[in-house]
Length: 304
Length: 248
Image 1: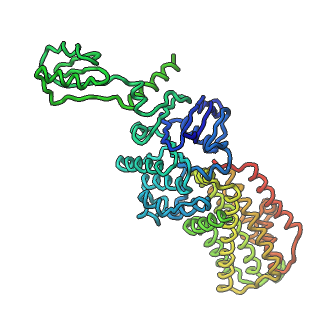
Image 2: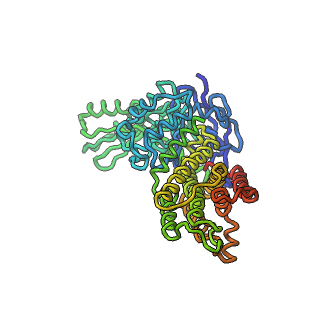
Image 3: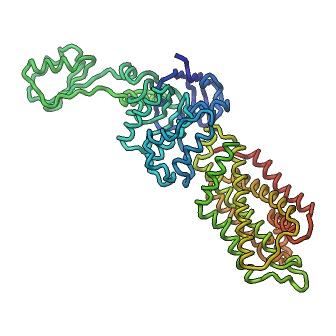
């Protein structure tokens, strides 16, 4: 696969504040790539450097094989910027019509975008009268109006309700399926876990982990927890089961820590011992657990 | 060119939808001109001193064209541009490969369209309500109009580049506009101003823009030194804008 983005030791400071310390990564064609991190300058600064809106202090980056400062590149990429709005009294259709006129040679039919992003009913509404979610969807639609080869979507689901966010993930996959590489910037864990192929966890100006969401979980959060309640007191046999690493009891509640297929072993053994708990539950680690673990660790290292 | 045309068309629609700028640019100058005409009529001062010796309405119609052009440059343009920067509209344009020349070009073009509408309104109000004379040298008046609009567009784009918020731009613009309205020839006739007022008046671009429009209108010819001063008020802010323009 061709790399669409290549970033090599990117660094950007504002005065004494280091926004991007040292960031390197590649994004390949057709990928949905996510920069995940707490609110902070590093993610947005990184993508702004890649869009040619900022000049990095050092490091090398290439977008679609070009220097990000190349003016011609802007016509081939789409972006939904953080902290950008439209004039209050500009109407939805006028915005789409205007932005598609900037790139006359690569226009898509913006009427289609209007339908896809659920704005058909609002085509004559002024920007200031749109709800937060409608604004977000319009700004995303504007990012796609030039049929970009690569699209940057910075905090695109802020202000959307949970149902609308899920719809957005479906649309993001559709964008990718039509051949556009997608770079997301987000601080929502579920957003990184759901539509993304690879996630770069960013903290304190650096990428501290980069893999598929499943890969991150498998590599960094192996422990699975199985819980249930029982009034049986003798449970020593639980600790002998394969994949079980520890058993903790709080009154009736039992916590079993383990890994791999621990749930199957515990469930089978419980039934065998005549225990059929109604509240048998398993907690798989999520990306959030990985994220918290990794960012806390990196903060500890900094403080130490 | 396509971008400039499209942006200008949308900007004109946005202008019409913005009550503040419509009031200051089109309604207020026409309204004050209407009052002035009712109060002073068009009979020249018998001593030939005030109103440069011509009828008050002949004096005021070109003066109010100047004032209307000034309000485009001092209020409309800076508020729009500073607001665009403040809200990230300029950032968005830049990311969509819009050049600074498209932004500046469309704002200037919109200034011309609005100024033409203003001229039609002012001349319309004056001819319906009062007796006054049309320009003595129409060609020279058109040239003066073009230079005046360009000058205030340059000033407005400079103010919009300099001031960081729409609120600041509005405050500064309205203040400058009122000072110029009173002291630069669109208020009391310049002959009645005292020395201090005249000194301030001499520093304002509107004074020279009004003279530039008025001279050929009332048949006083074309003053090259006035044109030079107006041209200076065009060139200096234009050069400063090139130096200080910021997208965000």
